[in-house]
Length: 223
Image (tube, rainbow, N blue to C red; front, side, top):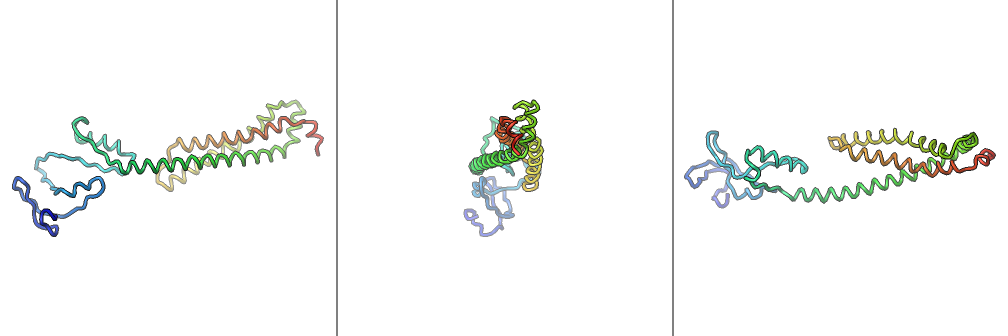
């Protein structure tokens, strides 16, 4: 407007061909379109033939940019080699940094939670095995092998861990759906649920081995 001598959104501009266009308003271009501040945008008439020099498409989500670029090229109707495609990289770079930071924090959090699960699972199973020591001693006296005792303890732990993991994954996915408006990718919840079950099984092994290697005679004699 300053270069054209306009003090308000009023008046007219003339192109090199002598055509006059009324000024209908102003705009302030920002972001990746900030260079448009040096241009006058003209709305062509319905029957006017124009040659497009630039095709601008805005994506709502950063992860949609590759698909939007491909769809934009297809919409123009030319070969990809015949056009120059430029993508705004600033937001993508910021997203990569944030994703890396959040990913590192998420991995650390998962490791801490699994470590706590391992410790609590081991304590719980030790308490359960101690409470059933006479039962395990009786089984051993009746001919059960050490492997049988280990299997009983681990299976009893998994019987509680598997339903708990299923409920936890379903509840966590539901909360994320409520908070973000979309379902999380299935890989992460399934991986966390699977690791939780594996951790509980690992936590049950030391108590199971402890019960399997106790002397059944001494256990049965202990009041």
